[in-house]
Image (cartoon, rainbow, N blue to C red; front, side):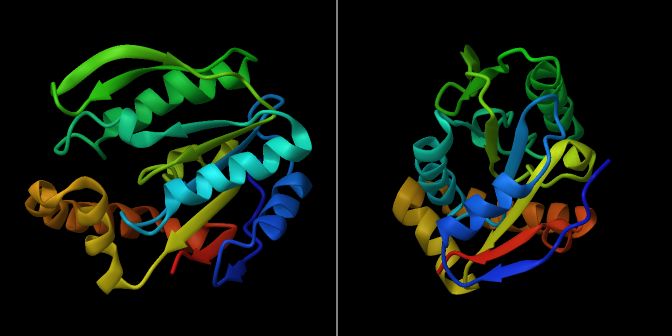
Length: 197
């Protein structure tokens, strides 16, 4: 049974408060707490996932992080129904059964899945990326985190990180991700809402 969100709003990454919220939440996927970090491209999801992984590792042992951009099937198929089927089959079902999750990793340069990536099963598994707050996953998620930033920062951050060559794809992506956020009420369903300014 999914725990109803208790809204907490933060204007920065207060790792100690996030850590306390995770520690207080129940295991909803076997013996594992699934933490999702969703929000628009460039908002700081990966940064938060990495910082949170380090903070949680200090107190509870190693934490695993799964980046959804490794599971997207290119730009056009990134947020289609197959993504959520892959998340269920490759990540959530194995974790629920006490098995290391293992997923195919998409190579963005070759335009295809090329290698398998096995992730250690840890007491907390962080899934970060657009798509992690999908409604189909919520019954397995202990803490859903929404990260946002000022609209005028988002595209610039992505271009600085990934290069000018993806600008056109990112403009299309921004519409696609917004449709996904709206149709799944991703922000409204999150336990924690954070500004990644």
